[in-house]
Length: 431
Image 1 (cartoon, rainbow, N blue to C red):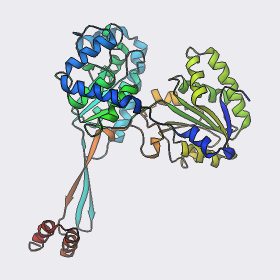
Image 2: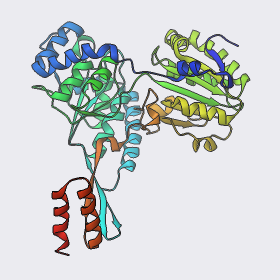
Image 3: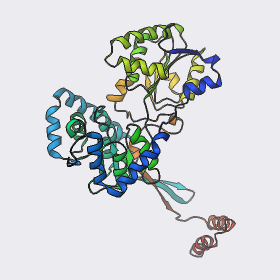
Image 4: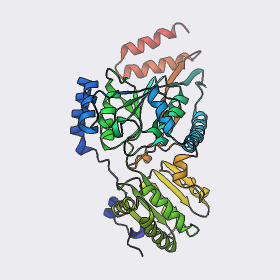
């Protein structure tokens, strides 16, 4: 079988092999001390720290405006093709529709044996959104992170995106932001962006929560700022597991593996299959794609570093492996994919069937592509409108029976809280 990716049998995977294959760690520890220096600098000096960064890292004039205003947005829109604008508008419409359907009722109350207990959903007041720019610009991420914020009703959405050549923000990113509903952003990237939004500067507003994927410096800064500002989760290198049986088209398997691998050399790409034929032919197709693709070298490096093919004896064994891996993206290329969906416990996003490549999902279906990595899918799901909202409990005792007050007071005294008990008992006399 082709040597482009290491091939394993699920039944023969040792504990050490499983650890090496499935354990993906956030590589932020080495950066944390340096990131904390950046954070303290931005906290102390605000805009001046950002301007120093302009000179030292981006090699642009320190008087470059931090604010990206209306004029620069208009200039960017003129540089973007009408076809791309139309595609971004279509994607934005679908993302908005999904986000709107995710909105919970503003108030839900339940009658719990005489008491009203419920939840009022309210938007977070301010959110900082990070959109990668510069050499690796992702206008789709601008749509994915801003549109749910506006759908949730967030009052202030502060967008940070790094400068590119000559200090200008990426035109496609600005076009996407404009389509999403934002016409003001801040020209700052990396750890400086996270620190500026967490503490605020003379120009960049302080926010309650920071959302969005980024490079290693931005991700490390989000972790270092835990306790200062809320965040969704640290989004790391992309991950894909393709679950395939003998009905899968090996050519499509290869295309989808290559698509995710081209994100970067640290991408995690795996094929879990019950068919040796599919595995062999998919690897053969992958070899051809590596030779043909513009980023074939990146694809090859990712496959060399973290690629794997695992042969399972049954679909159930394959599913258990998937749940152990807990990938960001899971693709089901099997004869009856919907029967598998109900058995998937851990995945950020599931692409069902041959017509649904994860790359299509990432851009156009309306599902959000900001997803948990590093096996965080075992604990949480992808970005939704609820990440921009907060539940507030609403309670009314109403005509609660007096014995429930008495029992509550009993628990309070057991915990040594006499004032609690008396506060409760003072109501009994009024019943």
